[in-house]
Image (cartoon, rainbow, N blue to C red; front, side, top):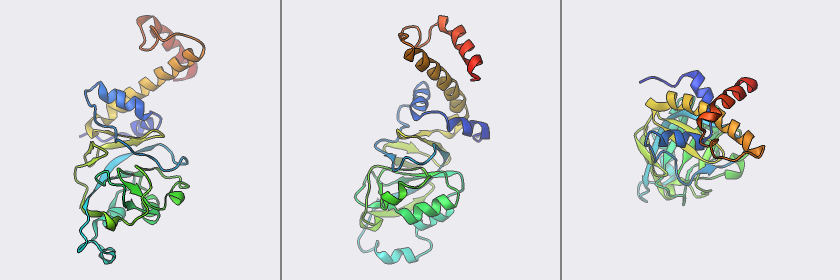
Length: 238
């Protein structure tokens, strides 16, 4: 499998999640947008990185007590220390935001280790502090109670579901101000290249719409717009 090239990784940093979902839809992939997650803060850059996963099941009271965190093999703690730099930690919390998937200390440790971001379909605690970080963090809603009240960490870097989207280790995760999309790893380079072209055309369209132009023959573009778009790209260095 061809890895995501550095050039295409940079392209994905400039392509919206909305545009990526359209490129995926053209390939009949309709379920790659992670439902009901949003950024915790507004200071983080666009998120791009390979998926590294953690899976939770429901907690059990006789097993999930505060003492489990003393065990260095605890899957939640191990995941924070083992997630490779440049990767996005994606957590399957079963869409249960009644307890935290992690908190400010673990998210900060992940950031300091060079991860590209973190996503849960549950929630995080310490959200006011997390919101001030220049680190991409996505959740359903704040969840102050400790994860042990609802969640038991069981599997590291296995296929999971997050917000009803399938996530396989190594898939490319992209997040912006609207949400998070999962690009199958084998499609990442071509999606980046196509998305780059789509973004340029959408910027051209937006400029023309703001000038008062109608959308027919423009969005989607007809043959008559090709030469105009080519001239616009040349003039704008796109």
